[in-house]
Image 1 (spheres, rainbow over the protein chains, first blue to last red):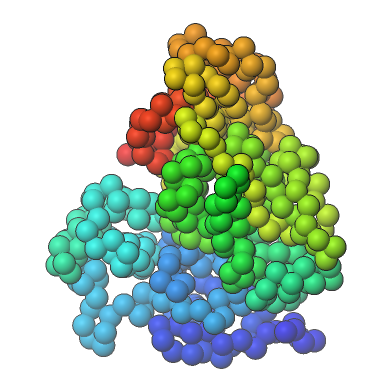
Image 2 (tube, each protein chain N blue to C red):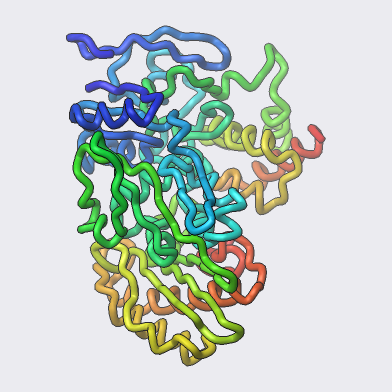
Length: 160
Length: 298
């Protein structure tokens, strides 16, 4: 898998699109998404698996992409915040987080949206506690949690 | 540096024999390297797609828990929740949903942290680690496996393929509780697991093990006096006293040794109480921390 330049030629499937990339094994997924593929919706906050700003879906399940080796994601479906909207139509979670005022600085928003997407996918009728657990790996430094929780609740109601 | 994705246990064994190190979810290995705790190994073998490592097989006498079973599965699989509840209690407290989706019980065990949440539950349930290399498999007790913080007695070419746990008989229950400052992405300040079997109201057997108060997970000794009697308030106080006495905690940025020594007794008492209540048929939902309001509040 390696050659003298220590680069691996791998294909990453992001939001349904296959991307061939040549990357070092040690590269983290968030860095490759942002710097190689230009998908800068995914944020790097703590770079330490604490804050959840880097949350993406791997085969539908949330993972911290800051601490996941990009080469280990080959052959899996990666979904980033750029994959939520369909054309100009925002995903219901995106619409509802805007409507609820659940965005202040916005840095945590992509990660929140990815965790919430996975939550509603497996649990279309979550309790408030279940929503909190679903978003428990995502920090918001603007302390906007209440409106974010509202947005997820509202989306669940809308999608049922 | 290279990473190869394994599709079988044989692939992994061959790679380990050639000097590679295994990676499952990378929640210790990759996070540790980004925190500067150590560099990533030159050669990695990704073991997370090997289906044989993800099997939970409940037999007549024992249950074989594949090392690749994730925390997310441990907290929801009926076999674990119903029969090895302390493991489910622990798995439900690990990290966040993202950590639990990729973190595995084998990774937890082989990382060898004295703060690992699934460690003390596995000890009180009598689990052994199945280690496999090219010559075959052997079962190792966990107190032989864990030799120090982050250190195991496994040879570099050995893969933890499963945890083998004896099935608890009728009248058995187990629980894990931990002290925490927040509800997510937390590492145990201290934690305790207990497994109790009851004969009517009286204790037939009791095991208690402690998390994050010694260089490795520590089993409490000297609890034999509690057998044959109810696990009443005096008995629970004896559990707490034994736990506090036998702990050898450190001071670090999260807690002082004195605080840990005191609170480990409280956690041991709560774990033993919850295990006994489950053993007597009471339904305490997973995790105990949430069901009984132990630890951080919402």
